[in-house]
Length: 181
Image (cartoon, rainbow, N blue to C red; front, top):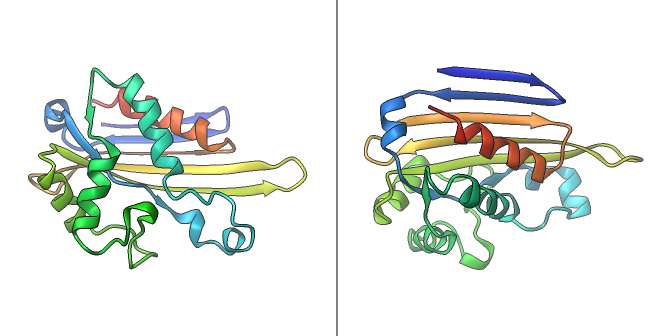
């Protein structure tokens, strides 16, 4: 089922590819989201949004309270530890893929999920750009994929974008994911 909404300056899309598998999914390993803002020339000059984990931490904070009855999100520390054990991602304090422009490979994500006995891994990409310097209006976007650990297939995917800050986009995406069926 695909759902798409626009309005209130937010554009969201949600696509469930396997509703039965989605209903069965409980334990989810959330990998640190790939922050594409860090690749921009603007980021390199201004060094804003320096916390690589900021989007992921905020997502985990909101989703653990709003979706506690739906998913069991594994502790971030366990996920980061499993990633660093693969040897491709540097130190846990500043975890980043060696191939910085591509994020995590699906194979590595599935290895992390399997090592943590997760039903699925949640992969995400985020970005934020300043669009009006005088008013500091931001356009932010977030895209998520929930991938079944056993099959490697996408169960659910969603995206949300708009002229809102990080917290609004994350909060909206949690609501989009919560109602996915």
